[in-house]
Length: 439
Ligand code: ASP
Image 1 (cartoon, rainbow, N blue to C red):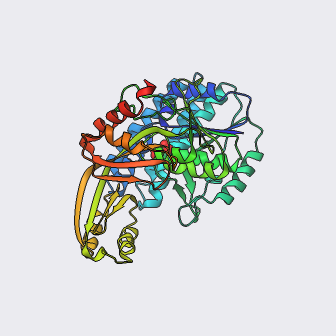
Image 2 (cartoon, protein in one colour; image 1 turned 45 degrees about the horizontal axis):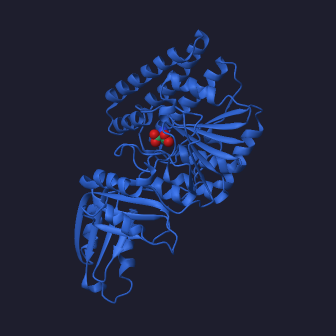
Image 3 (cartoon, rainbow, N blue to C red; image 1 turned 120 degrees about the horizontal axis):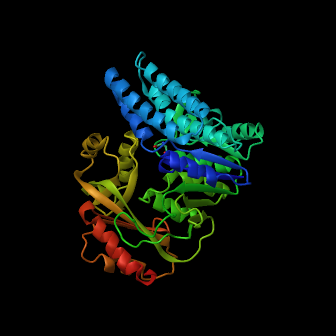
């Protein structure tokens, strides 16, 4: 068994759906996990916003526009009128369902049901397309096996039991299902948060004891730097789970950060592949740690740094707990933290409760806030006895102001906080200095 996951752009046009169907038409049994067609979830978020605000006419306008787009997709995807009609009926029923919410109270539960329509549509369209091509496949609903518990964590026991039962019912080599969507502990439609299809694929890989989980995107794996800001980046052949997790979290947009953990726990290899170049190997992620030194650089934007200065920290205990409690109350996770005897600097990437947090922190000391910062993260395998990595990094960045440094938290990450306006230059300087031998 192998799990293939295709993201939004890989199912973004009828042509791409046709390409996928060629890629998956092999002898090995596989579960194909799909995202919604690109842009759809964003549109559904916007439609939900209008429905919340009871802007029903606008919502219907948006729904109709999206529905018409899907009608065009169906026209191009299928050859035969029978399938074109089947596709149109499917689309109409999904969009009528969304429009039915204009009649009712619209809450977060209805929103989740609306967001689920994107994945339900993309998977059904691929299933119909394969049927038209006489390629046998089964469509199973993630709502029948994917579940999160009351803390929002995947219920791995339930997922395994129910997924295996669904798989047993079919003899098809191609089993299609939705990424992202699930049920919660009340049995309501829910989801694994934005970009969650990778997470679905990883959980499905674990539940089905897959030999590999393949995440298919438009780039040949994880690169050694961010190709949007640095020219001539190279794809990395292999990373350990921990290295990949650091990169996924700190910027490499290619993989959802949560998706590494389940695969790591069950030691299922994850391979990042490129739909545009299916024969290239991409990046393999596994348990072994291979090679030392710096492997990749990534950056994460929209970081806010909060500094708390207080004489009360001197030789005190319990001060950090008081700070952390405030972040816990406001469900805001902390990325970087550095301390001195009289101050603590903390970074966050979610400013929803920034005002509340700073108000409460004011009781503990003098608070300073800086926004528009970026974390530049250098990932690799920094073995304890090795020397010189820090020197190389700081030499490269000698002309860039660095606001915070975090080194030693794990063996795989050095994080630096810089102004976002300096990020591109920092990425390029690090590239020239750290990977000089690669070019
Ligand atoms: N369609 C969902 C989103 O856009 C999930 C995913 O694509 O992974 O967030």
